[in-house]
Image 1 (cartoon, rainbow, N blue to C red):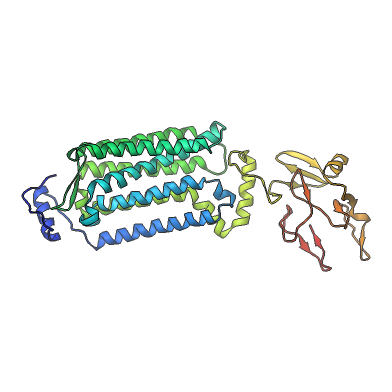
Image 2: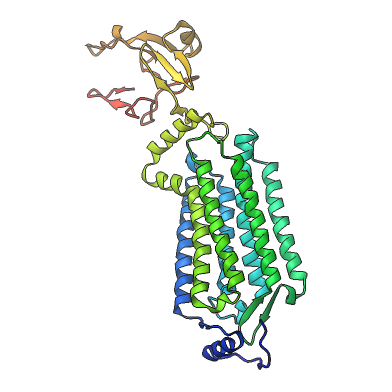
Length: 410
């Protein structure tokens, strides 16, 4: 697009629209309140997701959240925000004057770069899942650094080449008309690279198809991929069939909203459930999450311990002093357990033979006690600890019950 013969002065929006309409034979819509409204809506959506990210970091010790690799998820969200900043001028939602008039800056270094970074972050995330679940290898330390370096080098290199190539082959601004013209061949190349990136995601998702887990990594990944493909199809059609869409109100608003919703929904698919469960149903959800983790055999893959503060949700107490822990049965009434699981200051006793303040305890169960006659809580399958006031136990009620005489029964 090129319109010549204009003086270098700021045009009235209506005059600008008429000139562009006459030159391009299309209906041109000046920047209006509708554009401002869409910017505000998108900013609110990104703000909401940002609040969830902040909440997740505050509650990073909540294991279902920690398992989501918050570092990479946060970088993904930041790249989405910067992508949106590039969308605002590139899609024509503001007048391209002043700072917004630097076409190469906003289109190449914000819109293109961070759109690629956003896709690359998903590649890294799916690669991490493949490495952990399929290759049984950790994704931390040097592997993290290599992945981050690859993302930076690959994407920055493409944008650096775009910057150094002549503007008439990539992005050129026309200050008189307040437009940024992106050459067709460059559009095709940029969109084609996006397809390549998401094709890489498709390969990794295919490799994740057989993950046997209750946490829906495959379905979550598939949902993200479907959203990405829908947006890619829309981007391809809009940029090729409607080359001047930034001048058309309907198309520029649609493009901006599609990008915004896609970027935020993808992040919410990753962290939404654990964050909302942490807010509304923290203890029960974490217990169920840990039980599923053990059932699927992925405790090591998620790099979480089954015992936090000496407590595990995986112990199932049965009758006759037996306990099941990851399909291993322990008999807490056996002599071998007595000899190995209590110290010299602790002794085994039968509650049926004990009396306290003249009241006979008639339970036939057995327990451990210290020299003060206090029962010792069974915290996991390997250790026995003295009970701590208000600390959860592994029984159904979750906490020790206080009795009328002030004693606590575990």
